[in-house]
Amino acid sequence: MRAYSRAPQKNRNERKPSRRWRSQRGYSLHDVLMALLATAVLSAMALPVGRSSVADYQLNSAAELLSRDLERARLKALDGNGDVALRRESDGTYSLSGKLQRLPHGVSFSISSADSVVFNRLGAVSDGVTTSFVLTMGDRSRELRIRAAGAVEVRR
Image 1 (tube, rainbow, N blue to C red):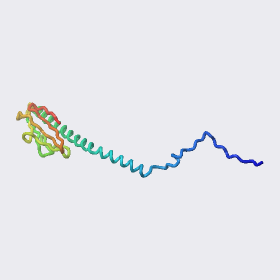
Image 2 (image 1 turned 30 degrees about the horizontal axis):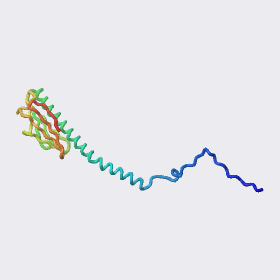
Image 3 (image 1 turned 45 degrees about the horizontal axis):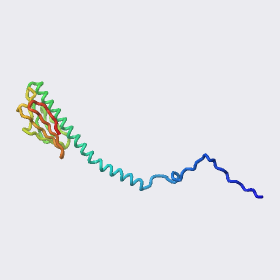
Image 4 (image 1 turned 90 degrees about the horizontal axis):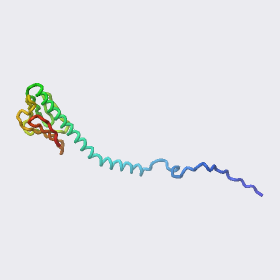
């Protein structure tokens, strides 16, 4: 009789790596292109929203700046017991007590009456008329109303 040798037995507790992980070495060109396409589509959808948010932020900050300076002019008039004026110099600049202020880039404004608002020693608008400032940036706008008594109100 002939003796046959047996093949060595493998440990049954050892597992073979799956073919899927053994053969995959990285991402294919197709995978990378699909990921880039998805990123481009999502970016294109988010861009208009981001631009409008920046425009709203600039317009709101310009309204806050002008509102704060109008309130400062009113308080100076009350404190100094005399008239204080805020004058419009150009579309994007104004002066308060001789100091020139600029609105954020791209924001312009107009005044409903004259080119200035003068607060008297009582903190009221000296001509006694409600005055409106309209801030614009592209197709967006904000309105600041200065009531005859001197109160400042920001409207959308």
